[in-house]
Amino acid sequence: MELWPGAGTLLLLLFLLLLLLLPTLWFCSPSAKYFFKMAFYNGWILFLAVLAIPVCAVRGRNVENMKILRLMLLHIEYLYGIRVEVRGAHHFPPSQPYVVVSNHQSSLDLLGMMEVLPGRCVPIAKRELLWAGSAGLACWLAGVIFIDRKRTGDAISVMSEVAQTLLTQDVRVWVFPEGTRNHNGSMLPFKRGAFHLAVQAQVPIVPIVMSSYQDFYCKKERRLTSGRCQVRVLPPVPTEGLKPDDVPALADRVRHSMLTVFREISTDGRGGGDYLKKPGGVGEARL
Image (tube, rainbow, N blue to C red; front, side):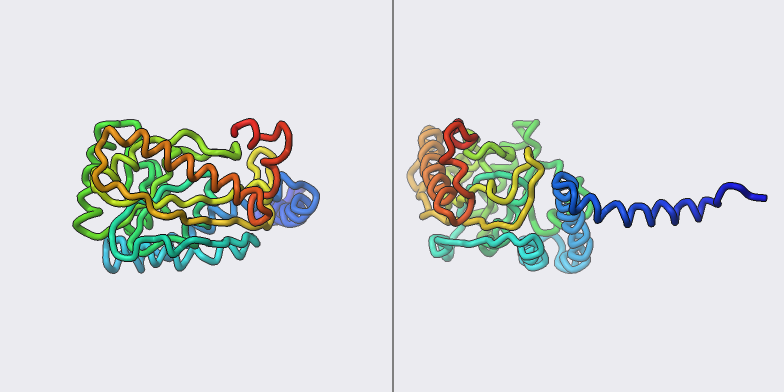
């Protein structure tokens, strides 16, 4: 007589136990809810990339495929109850190449980027993203530019090629000049690659500022709820006549203007909450 259930029965029992456990964790553990939401966010993007790949493959690697990715990703903000409000979109130059620079807070930046992304604009991303499964292949097909930040010589060579592409193919590029995600409620010092690129190509810089996510997202607190984010497009900064020696001052000037706007839109009740006003808060310490 068999005393222990078979493997199939054990798997069924474990599955049923998991079905009972997940709702309990969802309602009783904010941390578990955060991890579930982030896991679904990343998994859903990978799944959408699988759907996008055969559509994008029809025309091969082409910046126009970014329109397909944008169309497929726009709905995610509604799934999470995050309202993205765009202001200043009229500042985009209508018919010329330019370099977009934006602050970088988390992977949720993708939501604001897709909401405001202009035509024929592709991000510059770290090379590691290329190996991120279906997402990497979809990004490659959409013309995303990958650079190896650990190999400075290669990165400089790629940026020189990008400068030529901007002018010959009427392409815009999106760069996060902080170089990495910043969860501290301010802006890290800007790396100068994007500004060297704009000066080399003699094209304008379009700063874009996304308000703080602190009222609905905090990685440290394991919190992701519904909320509001404001995306502000600032007037373009011309680079005509500037030389490489002017890049440090240019980068500092753009960062200062972006940080000023970031403080404004992160404390006006329309994205970001009032955490920057709290004495001793993270934002105040960095500002």
